[in-house]
Every structure is written in structure tokens, then in C-alpha cells.
Length: 140
Image 1 (cartoon, rainbow, N blue to C red):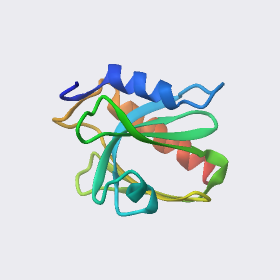
Image 2: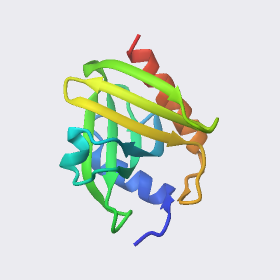
Image 3: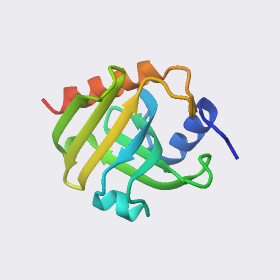
Image 4: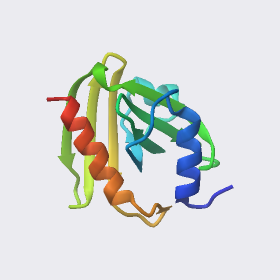
């Protein structure tokens, strides 16, 4: 069982939920926030740590178990073509981004940060930037 979120677990778990025939162009970790239907389905009321990946066609969220962050407790695969509305805001700190995504499947809200004491992801800042740019490109 991992104590910190890390590159090895992120790569392994995102591969488990990657749509067949697609390849990730960006990966990062984040936190699903808010009491959306997706959150309730994952059994959480407040927030869930997750690994995020973006391919040429899909936005992938691998939600992690509170008890074992090296295990997936839920997954969301959102085709980019289904995104109806996207809003990317800065968080309270300059290195945070808040993603609000509305799609045919419902609403998602995620908090992404460039660094943290609970994660050891080497290319987190690059992953956050890649994900935000790719989502902005399809929502124009």
C-alpha cells in the first residue's frame, strides 16, 4: 500500500482505465470536489484524490480509495466530444487550477495543484498544463 501518490501508481492505474486504442498525452493527479452525482456514486461527500489522464479523444479520471491510494475505487471516462461547457479558474494559490466540466454525463469539478506534500509526481506541473490546454482546445 502506497503512502504517497506517485508516478508508478499513476501510470499503472491510468493504464487500467485507458480507453482501448488511445494513448495519454498528459497525466497528473488532482482532487474531485463537490457533491455531484459522480461523487455520490463514488461514495464520497467531500473530495476524492484521483489520477487524471487526457488522450486525443478522452478525459480519464481514476478515483482512488481513501483506505488505499494505490487502488481505484471508481473511474470516469469522458469523451472530449461530449464536453458542453468548461471553466478553468485559478485557485486560492497561484499554482492551483479549478476545472469545472459539464458534459452529457453530468458535472465534474476538480482541483489540480502543481505540488503537494502528499504526492511525488515528477512532472505534475507539465501534466496540469497539458490537461488544461487540451481541454481548452476542445471546448472552443
